[in-house]
Length: 140
Image (tube, rainbow, N blue to C red; front, side, top):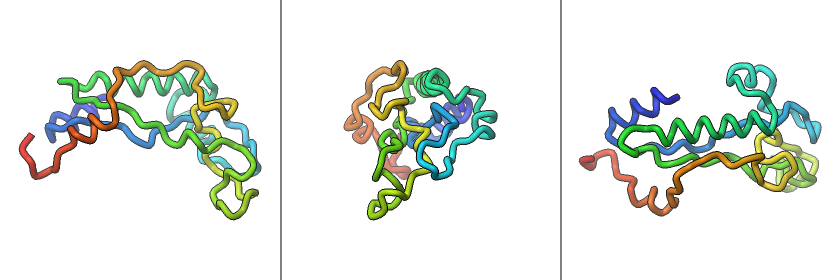
């Protein structure tokens, strides 16, 4: 990933922001609806499906983005922290029993929205990122 982030930033002379990233904290199914994150994906990623593995993934990801040369790594946006396994939080808002396939990926083991430890990151307000975005046809 570091190579790709560095290459994109260098090649297009643009800042980079990793969005919609997530990692499972468990392989357990809490709602009877099959999960997207499974043992095969855990094996590919190389992090255990535990709160500590999730935190390690997020820390490594934040460090990779922060290391993009010339300060062009702007941040990480986690997806989707609200998909916790609670009644009524399924894919279909009209069907409380619909379940969701992302329940293993919120940044939480209890539905509180808290990671076991937050990954380090130099704070970059979203508004600053939006202001720094430029159109592809504008000179860098």
